[in-house]
Image (cartoon, rainbow, N blue to C red; front, side, top):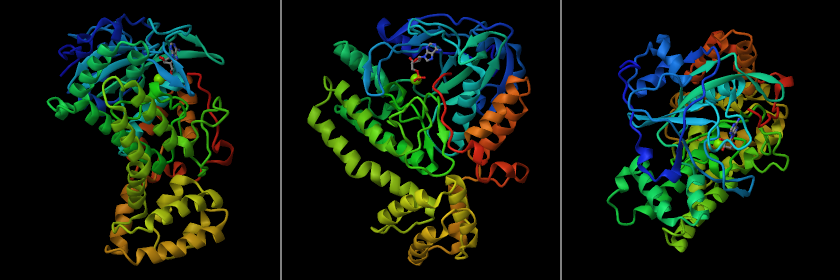
Length: 479
Ligand code: AMP
Ligand code: MG
């Protein structure tokens, strides 16, 4: 299908007018293509060469509106760093509608009703980050929003310095946030809360449509999906950076990529967002924060669902839903198929050891994937081999309970532990080049992002330890 015959629908507009504001994108000056993602295009049946269609740039710039589309910004609230803010919403995002179950959005396309004092724009820098990272997460098997393409422009915006403005086209199966529910709860509009819950069930949990207990079951699924998502973040070493309730997806997706980071050396208390001085959203805090965020969601749902039942589900999250989800992904990373009770301790002790030995998180698990009893390759990547040794002795013992051959275990571990993740220093290299008009590194990183488990010898320099000067840097929220 070409851009000319793609046809969008706007189911969100069937909701009450308070859920959104109809608004037009404000085009950027002299837009040009930075990247088009044919893989995401496939999801919406769009031709793989649509990036060459002049209408593609025009669509991202808001001057070509596809058939059936009506443009709007969504309203939501949220707890930001623990404080409730009633007036958030799509401040720089404009929705075009949906096709094949994907809701399309332009991020950075100008002011909306929800922009508050800000400019509605997004820098090339942060747009490239979101574009590449969302695709990388998808290929790592982590639920996420996707991205179809990105344009740059001559329009300048003020951040810490003057920067070029860009627009990234994002796609998601849902853009509803915990904060969307909070908005209607805190404004006392409980009929709209019910309308929203019905909408979410239709969009994200359609198997519950005719279920009498659908609202409670929807809440349970959100809890379960959130547990799985956070377990996957922890296992891959992803620090989101701004886990406010407006950045929590009702479908358990990774959304709103800001000052995120893939960890370099494993640090439990690592905080990628340098404005988060208290470390509220530190890597190691993410499971606790997701519990807190789910608690906030449950509060917003009290007019629809019995409080005690939700509390019980939240208790389950802490007692076994999250721990089981985490242990499951970690077992896979460690190549364990037999389930033993002691695994929890083995994993907990590994986390402590990882912290103490100073090792690159990705490199550790990739190297472990080839472990055959010879410890020297493991010693080579850590600062404190003696500490690691203690854990490896236990791992050796644990492996004797496994039913697979070492070769089978290694093969599966190499598919669970990526050789390549997009670390911030890599993305930064692409950004610096892009700001000088060279987008080749964006393409390179997209290639790496889509082949995380392959050897890719030509990109070996990105497989090792992060260069010392770039390790565990903090990023600003400015974007
Ligand atoms: P975030 O934490 O980055 O997801 O954003 C928090 C809120 O600020 C959301 O309501 C965003 O839409 C809004 N926002 C962030 N940057 C801008 C901007 N440059 N212009 C307008 N709104 C913005
Ligand atoms: Mg956000």
